[in-house]
Image (cartoon, rainbow, N blue to C red):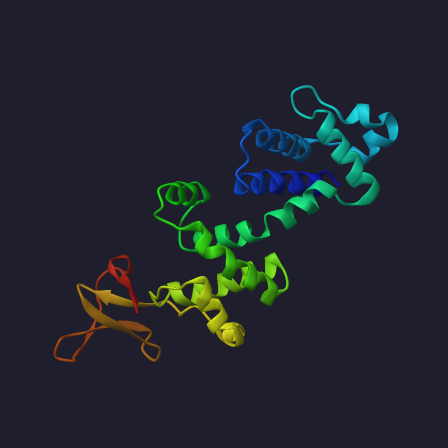
Length: 223
């Protein structure tokens, strides 16, 4: 149970960041509590059963509010504020995940939005449509990851709208297989299974028996 609550607290910290939380102490409080719960040997449910909410508090780590959230999870297996936060930040989660798939961190996204390099509002409608189409935020993120994996290995650009266009193909979108082939001093090589030897292919097409150390073979990615 400790790990489950720690995971929720970490996710709440991340969701508050996505939501533009102005009080960093709130975010830090969740992360501190999560780290403590991860390291706690005794099950928090046992502590609660023995000492009540008071027993869940830890000076400078778990205060009144987070102790009550732990109690709520012990009793109901969920935390209402967490569920509300997920719903409230759904669109922002999808937008942040889309930009993360393009190599832009949440902080960079916020800075670019402030400088008007990214018009954030332009992404809210397609993000909501994607959630509606996928059925959940997690499914929407999975769809983004599939398109990103497919596009990035082909050096293609993509937008949220690309996911709509490719929706019926999502299950068939596979990242391009990365193939590495052996070379020796710029010349391609081939392995002969029959002779159990490497050969270097000269520019004239001759098979020259490889006599150097295998450490000198250079493996290059072939697009």
